[in-house]
Image 1 (cartoon, rainbow, N blue to C red):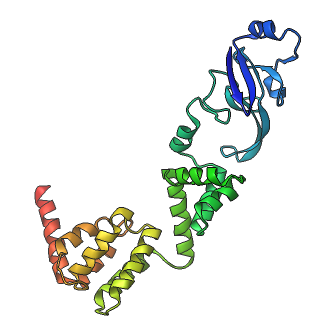
Image 2 (spheres, rainbow, N blue to C red; image 1 turned 180 degrees about the vertical axis):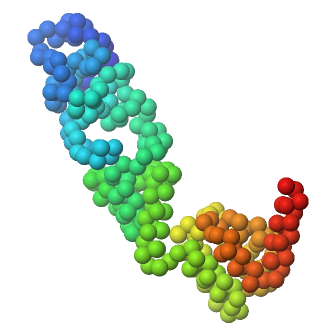
Image 3 (cartoon, rainbow, N blue to C red; image 1 turned 90 degrees about the vertical axis):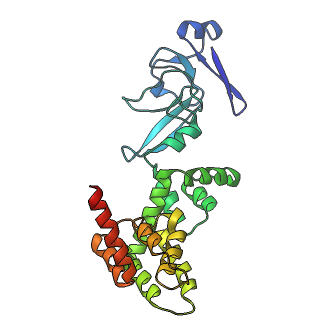
Length: 278
């Protein structure tokens, strides 16, 4: 027999009906666990006996419908004909898998309905904690703080947030081509406030995904130096960093040649070297 305490109450999993009847000879036992509600004893699909901890409704992201689920020491199971309740005890009664619930959330690839809502609020400028409280319908701010940090560290949620921001930027007419034009205009100017504008544009470039975030600062500083906005020439680094710009066409990248003749020479030289190697 396996035992675990959930919210101050002991729940059990018996190996089979015979073992269960030794402790509970007269308690009602449901043959179909799908008919069970909180507190009911049920027979699982593999012949074990356990107690329903909770029964409620969840949104099924795969089928895009609301569906009832039961929570037991074996984890969660969808209450439907093809639902399965079986196997070893799960690390969490709120998990569909036998893996640790936190690890499962981190490694999952497909976002849930609540995560889509969370990403939408984040992209609108709402704080992570408030976004989580709204999307997941909880009032526990301490848990929301930890959970929101975890979600923002996952690639699937980062992708959702980036996509939401890009859609909002597109609605405002901010595209990759537009940002490239701003780069050109600022670099060609010799105004005193160009450094301030570059910092603002750097933030916009990161937000819309034009440059890899980890390289955006370095790229913009080098571009400024190479084209005379700052006092040091580093055209070689500039040409290399330009290739970190994502989703630009060859024609768009070639437009940088109009800014600095040195960049054109270096770019041509680089292409010749690549051809010689091939």
